[in-house]
Length: 251
Image 1: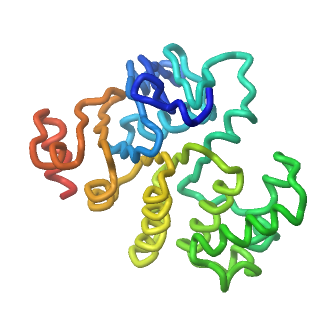
Image 2 (image 1 turned 30 degrees about the horizontal axis):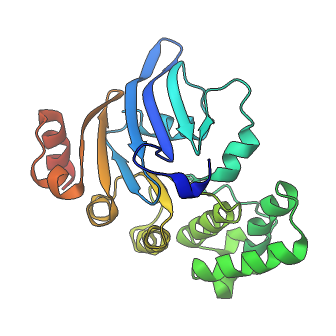
């Protein structure tokens, strides 16, 4: 299936009746949703509601117990899944930046395309230079992670994911560990990606950002999707008492 064929009948990400337990603890209890190409989806909810587990399942970092997750036509739960093939299509950025401390910003961005995609150094360097510009860090490209602020490190992490040319980007609480003044620079970077048509799935507690940018918001609690809708409806006309209570605490 080519990317030109993503239609409402063929979502780029499809999650169907997904269950996930860690031992006796059931974390996901029948989660289902679809994401269309170019959509921005925000997943919100209290701590321990299964948000991060869900996003990790989409990238095959956690196995699921039952159900189906399809990304770009690949069945993530297939025991024969080529995880490398999946991760070429799906980039993921975590709360912790996980940059290599002994590599410069530019070198961090270049590693995966050279090692995994086997692209030439010249090709990768040109791409990395463009990505450094995209995340507004031209003046920091030869800087080591230890000399960068948290927000700058997170932007390098985003550029590193983009270097693999993904069709879908997953963001797991990427601003949670940042100082308030550096949160905005990371959100602006994600906003730029979304405006260019990148499909984005974000676990986030940044409600202003979700309200402004998301096409659809999912509120999870205790492993289920309690309520969902476009921001205009979700924030103003929430129906479920759990959603109302959650929003009253954070808005």
